[in-house]
Image (cartoon, rainbow, N blue to C red; front, side, top):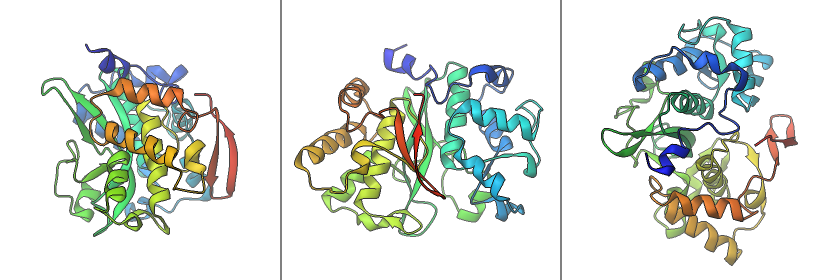
Length: 293
């Protein structure tokens, strides 16, 4: 196996289940089966009421659980059964698109399958809009290619959104990774204000998703509201910053054929590398969080 593929079979500091690794044993070994495990144990915070469940503030706060051990610990508190057993709605762990993607990536890595999380924008949530979103990217050994998997999209969501593709193989014009979104906005191909979520949008927002995607490629899969380094710069016109981001966009706008260069840039540049602490913009305001990654 190529060293890059081997790298993505190994857990990162956030995806590593640690003491809960045994929960990942004796699970399905097919991609559809593992996606069912993810959907059977995780509830999207923004879809809960569509399924008929009103979440308390305590349950909503589960979306702040960043690491796999903390998420698995809470999952067992809610339902101590094996992950192979689908949870009733009220016992599913609350998360968002990042959490669906991270769990699938962690399960695949546990089985030795190269997998990584990707941060970017989905075109299938609102018309003429690129919605802030995460998916997994999985190596298909039989076909010799990386492909995108949206583990969040179950039958109910596919029907509600009229999803026109197989969520196990999302077309790359339907999910736009961060670097590609940056290129589209910089070139004038797309309006930066059409990228975002709620009232947050624009080129600065695209930059944030882009840099989180670069971090995720380096197995640092942070929360969608975690910010550091170049993400927090108030200006978007520094020539050195733009040159760095344009280079990274060229390297990461697809399935990253030159990962070693991306890894080298991330590790060498403090503007990109997660420094050990982040500013997390939670519902109660910005907080400085120590990250063990």
